[in-house]
Length: 173
Image (cartoon, rainbow, N blue to C red; front, side, top):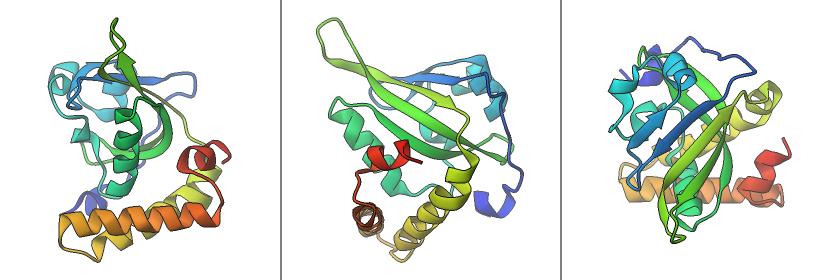
């Protein structure tokens, strides 16, 4: 059973709260605030040391995560709409600001993300249909590399029609 098959209840967190997490260079969680624990359904001890992908919802295209990682590995921040899975199999949407964390020597030492309540109209009218199309492009390929390449191509073409890169696109929604 995929997450999509049983994850039918959307969860929400208070508008005045921010979900915060930090990861190491490999994407393993090193810190999560109480709002993160509350919405995800995980205790802090269950999260620390686990890959952040523990929250990956099956409806999220791999191409969006590739874009996020490529951007952060290049030392830049990125904003993205993300659908996460809870421990119980429910889901929640966030508008994420993901950024590298730098050490005293200027080298990247990990990653930091703040997530806020997303705009409902953006999710329902633009993001969910776009992600569904990208996910469908990925699903047409059994080979992981081909699936990812197809998803990246679909996302790229969608952004080209909007004459914007992903970051510009999501910030205008």
